[in-house]
Amino acid sequence: MKTIKESNKPVSTVLALSLIPITGFALDVFIPSLPAMSAQLHATPAQVQLCISIFLATYGISQLLVGGLLDSYGRFWPNIAALAGFSLASFAIANTDNLSLIYVMRAVQGIMSAVIVISKRAYFFDLFAGDKLKHYTSLFSVIWSAAPIIAPFLGGYLQTNFGWQSNFYFLGWFGVAFLVLELVFSGETIVKKVPFRLRTISEAYRSMISTRDFTSGLLILGLSYAVLMIYNMSSPFLIEKVMHYPATVTGNASMVSGLAMLSGSLLSKSLISKPFYKKIFTAAVAQLVVSGLLILLTLQVHNLYTLMAYVVLLHAASGFIFNGMLAYCLTRFTQFGGLASGLTGGGYILSTSAFSYLVVKTIHIETQAWLGAGYAVLVVAVLALIIRTKWLERPAPSRDLEEEKVALLME
Image 1 (cartoon, rainbow, N blue to C red):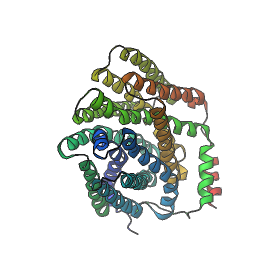
Image 2: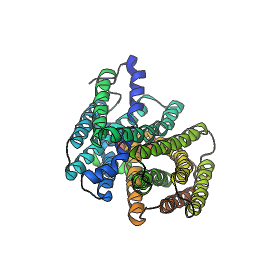
Image 3: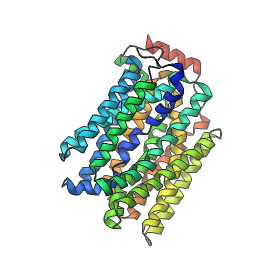
Image 4: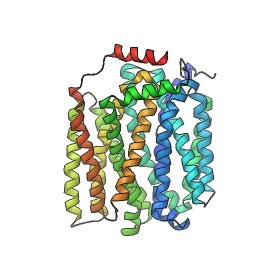
């Protein structure tokens, strides 16, 4: 077993944080290419948008099993294998015009991304505790926000100059570069492996899901992330087909979206010591007010600037809520290790996939007003869940009782 060297831990920590946004890159880098893919593959917009949904679904479902596997077989070698698989799938997509094969490879990318992200989250639970762990978990969504900033901007440039395939070549070489760096600087971090038992996993999941505040948190994470996803799925067609701007503008607009999410995440991190319920409730109310005002505005005026008004205000609030809720859910059951990380990641991604698909399917987003209506549906659901749960009024479970529960599960 290649155990991580003490001298390599600083570099390995940076690598672990750098791999957290790999899912965002896989989702966002080809967003500006959706119209071009639709044209060149002779597919409808819905067919190419399915590439996003397939990735999200497989990424979410895979996390539900990946956490238990990583607790049993370690973090390091599964991560290495996943980076290799992710790269191969990316190169395969770049070299085909068969939409069915692209769907299959996107599913492979989703599975491999789940292994990578869960192994890197588990890295921090293996090596850190207390305030240090809380610091890193609050950084996760901040760093994750880098992908929606960088990836679409880069994707717009690649699409304009080299075509849609270049986005997937980028993902392939991205995976290869980190595979080499991981082999050199990283290693195994798990101290004690536990046997892989489906009964243990199912009981742990049942225990977590039956906890109301945790389950509500997963749903709120999914709804907050769905705000970004419905924008990503509809904005290329609004900007390039309705407004007649080039793909670079789609990329720049998505970069603004990412910056808005990042600003919200940073603000949330800076207020980490403030009362949890009060701050996320305030952000949700602000979202609802802004979404209502912008729907009324765009019934009269609709252009790229009003679209960006939606993006900056609503995505910043979503980033704020997402950051606080992700840190809460990830640290809610640290005693379950990779299982808790897997359920958190898988649960909110599956929720995101379902919510964004339902909104896009039921609300045909062909104008900014309809995009605002889609936002409003998600925001109302977030606010209702926050009011229903009221975290501050719910005392945290006894740590001793939780540890006793874990011991019984692992017997």
